[in-house]
Amino acid sequence: MPYEAPDLASLSPQDIARLADGEGLPPVQDWHPDATSDSLMRIDAEGRWHHDGGLIGRPAMVRAFSRLLRKEADGRFALILPYEKQWIEVEDAPFQAVELRADGEGEAASLGFRLNTDDIVVAGPDHGIRAGGSADDPRLYLHVRHGLEARIGRSVYYELAEMALAQNPDRPGIWSKGEFFPLTAAA
Image (tube, rainbow, N blue to C red; front, side, top):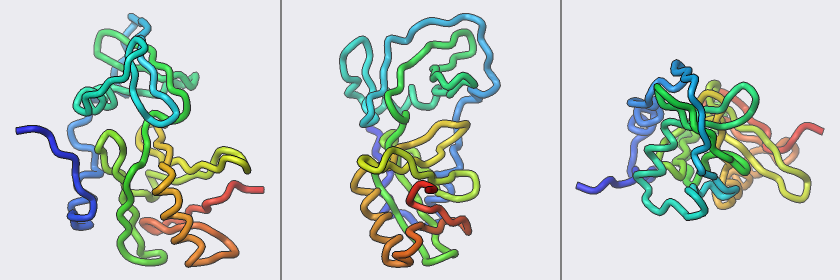
C-alpha cells in the first residue's frame, strides 16, 4: 500500500499531538562516526532535495533522508549513519512548513504544522517559532528537532500573520501550547 501524507484537516488535536511525538526517528544524536564524505546532496531554499544536480522526486526517499539529518555544532548539516557522516548543503532551512492546523484561541491555542517531509510539529516550548529574514524578505522558522528548523512557507506565513493581526495588531504574534511567539524580529 503506498504511503499517504497525513491530512491535518481530518486529524483531531490528539492525533496531531501523537504524530508530533516523532516516533521512530533514528537516534542520530547518539551516533558519532569517524568516517566522513560528501553526500552530493543539497536542499534548496524551497526545501527541495537534490542529489548530484538532479531533483529527488520520490517523497519516500526525501522522508527517509530527512530522518537521518543532523545539524553539527559548527552549523553544517550532515546525514548521519552509524558508520559514516555525509555532508549535505542546505541553502536556508532543511524543512518547509507547508500546512497549518490551528485549534483553540489565545493562550489555549495549539498550532500544528505539516512539513514537506510529512512530519508533524506542534509549536510550543520545545518547538519555537522565530522571525528571521530581512525587512524586504521577512521569514518565519519553526524549530523541528535538535537545532533543525523548517522555514514556514508563504501561504502558512500569511495564515499566521492574519491570525496575529486579528488578535493584536499592535503586537503581532501567535500563541501555541501556552507560548507566545512574536511574528516580527526584535528592533
